[in-house]
Image (cartoon, rainbow, N blue to C red; front, side, top):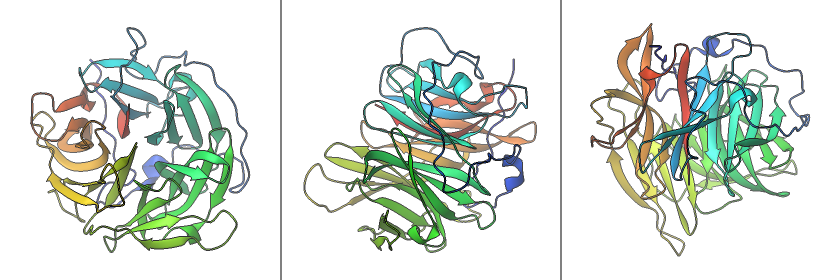
Length: 361
């Protein structure tokens, strides 16, 4: 049986990065500020890694795991593996021939849409039809996509993609998209220096959060699309010692989940911040949450997404178990219950690895 190689993180929480392993293919030719072509893709027809292409449709809520394909085979593609939260059933894969080999970040959008940022490409999928409704080629230009987050733009609903500079290891640019085209490329002036993660604001659809690893601070950013300075203010919550922060938009409120490891720490976990169903606040801190799933032997939390049912963290975690020189990765629930393992990365085919997760509901 083939075994999946676990993904070494693009931005492992608190770990130094060797970006050379991610730069296996040259970037595209489009200029950084040029609008890239938009194309509507048909349903996936090739065989993604560890394919599940039959059976009943996925029943929300379900976890979507972005899986890289590092086989180097001609025509290789990444894929999106889906696992139902209620049943633990692995349902139909998504992506197929549409995705490049390295999908790095994804996030749920409204109306059953899912935004996926890969190396060299950005896609939006309609998860009711499993079709890609937006495909934009991107010149990564010495950067790699690290976060995707919903964002209301001057042209309507859309999303942002944060790009990490491979030299400085912080976020230095944001590309903004509507559901039909790339709208703008925002430079480093829109993001606080030292930011390592961007995500949606849980209450303000026109803003996003920027987390600084060096100071442990989180800021609210309202970007400027006209060339002026963004509106920046401290996020109204006491968050310290974080390394990455992620949010899930919810009607009438929201959850933010952030990882809490510091550089060199193996005692990794996650904290939660909730917003009330009505009113302006306050934000309420909950946690810390840990991932004690015995089968995974989690050593480090790489990515976190909130469960839409209660806000509890779901994580991509990395263990000390080595498979052909790489640490294995798993998708796990908080705690150590019988249902804590959602996706065993060690059971996936060789030269595949889990990069990120989102929850569709």
